[in-house]
Image 1 (cartoon, one colour):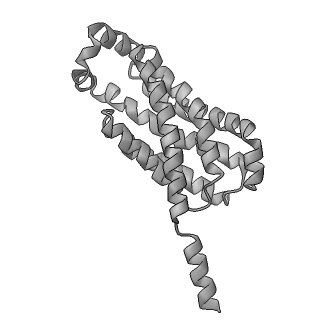
Image 2 (cartoon, rainbow, N blue to C red):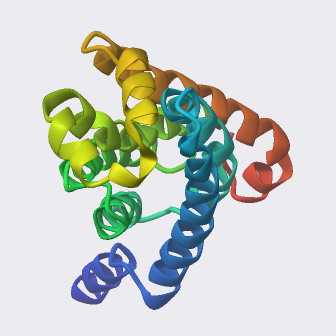
Image 3 (cartoon, rainbow, N blue to C red):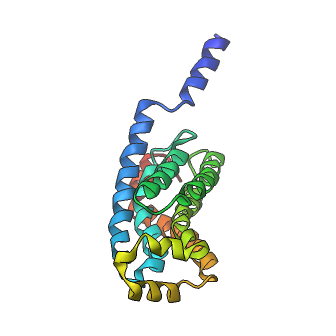
Length: 202
């Protein structure tokens, strides 16, 4: 009896097909929203503002995703997917390690909250959205290399974006991703209140 109970508990902690499907669905929704917003980056001022509007808009589907997360690993997988997709779409590799670290922190916070504390869910949303900052790292450490792959934007765009993103803006963008991720989480909680209640998150 004891062995069977232990085995059942272990199996219940493993990611099942339904869990992976949820990760895939919500990752796709979140990614589409972020990529649609990223299109506005052709306007220089919109590039740094992506660290504001991205976490705000992405917070809504991410908070809905959290109502489905009851096992360790789901948030981390979603973070990894975001990092991989950024690499595949030409944004560089920096988003992947950033996403893995921020995703792991978010994962551990949600696990500690036993997947049921609404206040912790907002904090999780803040940390998760830090992955976006990884997209900007090349602009600060190797701007020449970054713009060499985007010559079609023209010298005017390069000059305008460089002026908007001096080195001191790097920590500002990092904090913005976290802070507006928090606000996006709060917005998501308000809009999805009935889903949180249904999921037993209070």
